[in-house]
Amino acid sequence: MNLLPEGTSVWVPAILIFVGIVGIVIPVIPGLLLAVLGVLLWAYETGGTTAWTFFGVCLAIYLAGVVIQFLIPGKSLREQGVKTSTLLLAVVLGIIGMFIIPIVGFIIGFVLGIYLIEHGRTRDRAQAWARTKSALVAVVTSMGIELCAGVLIAVTWVIGVLAT
Image (cartoon, rainbow, N blue to C red; front, side, top):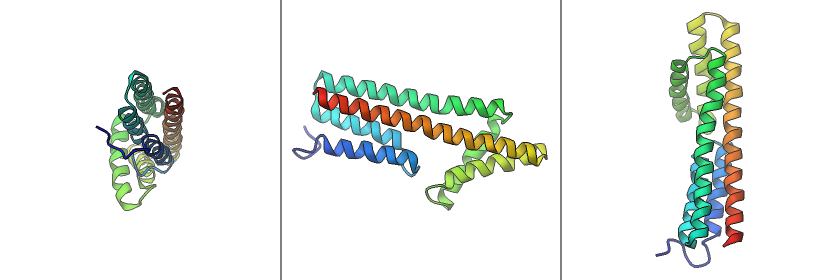
């Protein structure tokens, strides 16, 4: 049973993967997830061992990207003295910011949350600002890791399309 109209089994997944990668840079949609779902749709439509093997590789890239995306930036923030509770509260403020300021609200809310929480905790503006800069670096690092995983998924998918 095909989900897509005849002749679109490559183009629709390609569009999903492309929109997913754009969604990584402009965080409105879960970009990496959308990219891997595009590959899943392609594997389902194409069928066969080769397509499903390439989907498995893309799924492994996705999972590794998600894990690395949270481990590396989180570790650097903890090394700078930012507590896990601060990160959790900053994520909540980021989610609130997402509804107040579309597209960039999460990032602004997250970073502002780090500053406000650290300033309230330490009463030291310089230290709060230093930790806030670390949060900015962590956000950019996280986006970079996600973007690399997205591009790897796209390249793997293209190789899979050529192989089938």
